[in-house]
Length: 82
Image (cartoon, rainbow, N blue to C red):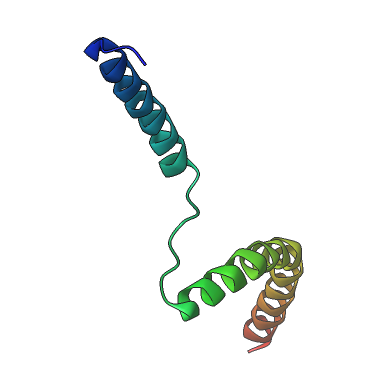
């Protein structure tokens, strides 16, 4: 083993460089911290049923508009008869 202190510094620099690289990767790929269990369940339910509720709203809107037109027509006919 050589007595040259430069190889020790090179080894330390190499380890530090590898550690910095691994640390950055580890921080990038860490799974998100979970908060309270209820929030996760509520978030999952919202993620699942939110788009479903939106789609149902869009699907039934024409039906609601048709019912509203019929009711308006019936109300207007009753007012004309008076």
